[in-house]
Image (cartoon, rainbow, N blue to C red; front, side):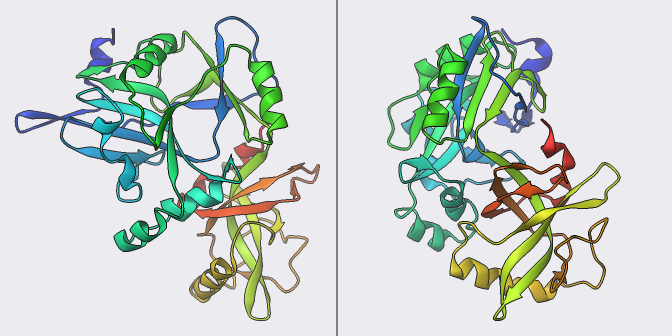
Length: 333
């Protein structure tokens, strides 16, 4: 059972009722090899948007990793009573969208980036989503954070109902075998979890470990280049602990559409600056226009070069995260 400290975490007293407040999700650390031992279980790492689903019995909220509301963007997930038999609940999972049978970050961002209700209704049938649920943090008035993962998974299995847009993430006893299967399927990677692990909001430790097959990075743009008046590439950087922006390479290839590039081009005049934002002049500086480091993108790439730049980067999508969160620590391992 949860401790007294845990039992009140995230609760806000309101006139005669208890309102659920989101927690900061527990994060895995990056690992080089799968852990061994019977206490480990493994799950596919989904290339989507981390999301908490909160239901206090009458009100529903979807909250992303950064604590931002996304209830408007995913109307098919706003009735937890249709996919969960609990009277009140907080679920943790990943919202994904498929392309060619595989999760596509670009596709799910077509939904996540929208702010207009009419636009969301129009895109909803074009980009169906799945909520891949892997944890339950609160259920029927009780916090489950101090329960071992094995018990939380059992409870999750008991409360989830069949639903076209919600699935429980399967768990597998052999991390190495799942990693091989994920590699064969060209998936992003796997997450290995200690079955005895409790859930530490805002925590990040080796009780959860992620192994990546496809490397990715969230980086901030500090410059652009043009072709025929349209932006055709961006120069990217990551911040060190002192707040200096270090160049990691440029990218123009990716999943951005012609309209995406045109929309981006229209934003550039308001961001142009004479001051180069990088700590040192990038190799690719000829013809570049410096911009204020405000635009953040998720990119996939092959590997890090010895020079500290990435090899064969591919732009996945623009993301709504603070530029200063684009840290050099992403180059771990």
